[in-house]
Amino acid sequence: KKMRILVVFSLLSSDVNGYCNAPRVKDYWYLRGRKSRRLIPQRLAPREVLVSEFNRLNDIQEGRIGELLKSGELAMEELEILQKYDQLDVDGYVRLCYCVAEMFDISEYPREETWLKDMNDQIGLSIGEYIQRGEIVLSLPQIIDEKECNSLVLAAQEIAASSSNEHDVPGRSRLCVADLDTHIVERCEAILLRVMDRLDLETPSIYEHLFRPSVHWGSRQPRSAKNPGSIAPLPELLVYSSLRELYMAGQLEWSENEPAINVYTTQGGFGPHKDHLALTVLIPLTDQITDFQGGGTAFWSPTDSSLSTDGAEPKQPPATVLTPPKGTALIFGGDVTHSGVPVDRGSRVVLVASFSTRTPASPPDRINGLLSCR
Image 1 (cartoon, rainbow, N blue to C red):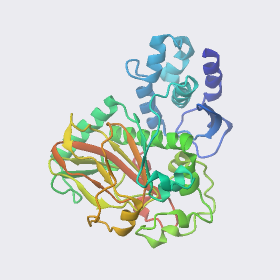
Image 2: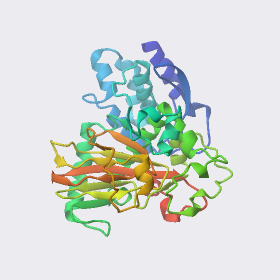
Image 3: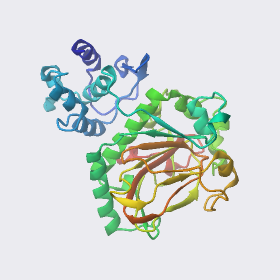
Image 4: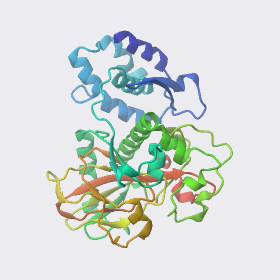
């Protein structure tokens, strides 16, 4: 086991001055899944994001590397060169942490699937195609650990209690992450990159079907897209090969004022609507029962979604209401009608981001995400 780790370490040494736009040999590294070995293209993330990830993963009490060190699976000598902060190879360390998780096959939180359509009607499509058709919601458990959730919740609740904006309604505050303190922006950016990395690794059909430039790209975008220009031709030089690369290159279009943190209090909810972009990531930061009662996210079937309009209650009840544990990322497509179920008591806090591949028709204020905050 240790030999394999050292081999990975030798491949991951890199410079962390900002982030690179040009591909290099060291941007390609192996992650071994349960059944196969895949070569995953990666770009260096911004240094502040990597430092945030380094601190999280290097937590001896809660981080994955900490668990392995305490159990004797790893020797500190194998990592100490990466832990010298004056010459910190943050990028290599973060990648090593993820590689170690895959090498030792210690992923305890497999992807879960919730079908919004009778499973007997499945026709052998890829997960990316089912997402585009609005037939499935993916759940990625433990994307954010409890410590991270609690930190974001505390900050969001304090800000929501002391400020308001045009997007707030009784019982609901909506905080644009880009407007928040730098440490919150960095943490949220690291979380989104974590989600993208996992989707790129485990469900590459999402990128292939919904984001990769092709002659069929426009026809695969949400039918409910508000901007008809969203099916405009893609830039000719858009040659990226993963969600992370699209993000790092600034080639994503985001929903208005997203990524965002929504804070729901008593009677606070969000009416039935569609997000109109290729993919939505929704991560609850609080738990039902312990933090709030009621709440959750309701999802309607593809048939009912196709008949509903934003703000109007569908005639049929939702196909399901999901209340996953905090830190779980829900992944679904832009044609799915969904709603935030009103909270009976307590506080429900969620991180949400909807995005598509950027096109020439993308509004200028929708293409920066969190990149403009650096």
